[in-house]
Each structure stands twice: as C-alpha cells, then as structure tokens.
Image (cartoon, rainbow, N blue to C red; front, side, top):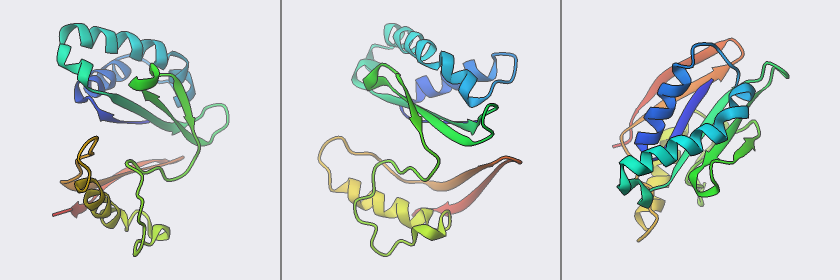
Length: 157
C-alpha cells in the first residue's frame, strides 16, 4: 500500500508511523475500515497540542491492492469532511486540477509528469489565495500487483 498526503505534514508523518507500527500487514480495504475513526482521533489530538493546525487542512490518500478483488484502488480522507472515507477509482488523479493541458501528452505518463507539474505551478502562481505551492523534484511511486517502484524524473527548476 502507498500512503500520500497533502496539507499538514504533522498529521501525515504521525499517520505513517501509526500504520507502519500496527504490527501486521493489512490491505487497503482493511485499513479503510478503521481509518476514518483513527484519523479523527489523531487530528483532534494534534489540534489540542498544536493550535496552529486549526488553520490548516489535511488529506490522506491510500492506494493499494485489495485482498478481496485483487484490484488496485484508493481512498481519500479529507479533514474538511471529517476524514470520511472517499473511494477513488483506478486512474490518474491530479491535485490541484490542471485547467490547461495544452501541450501535455497525458498518454505518456509518467514521462509528462514534470511538464504537468510546471503547468500546475504556473497556474497556482496566478492565485492570490488558496494557492498550492509546487516545486522541487519529481518522484514517481509506481504500484503494480508485483510490487512497487520508486524513481526520480529530475528537478522542476
């Protein structure tokens, strides 16, 4: 299973620790059965100890292979909706949504990822509020039924 997150890095790092230290392997569906309640409790605890979090949001993503169906799918858990489980279908998800895809060959993914991220960065730079900051390096985590592969596509700058 792959876990990703946006927003609060504190929540993300604590969640990774909790999932990794649970002591036994669970698939994406088994963890989903408990994720909402556990994320709500963790978010509440973090907000008590770090009041600045009240001005932040967080989203946790789980992507994995279902032991029941054998298929890859995911779930999103958003602080703004009380970490309610949201099933994600198989496919490419982009955050923030890329409004202008001109000149980007999405069929070449992941090779086009740096171009997508540069376009997202240009798009977000035009915003005066609720801006997502994009920069740094492009890293790909590719999940298959046979395992996962992590590699870099270089820097954006």
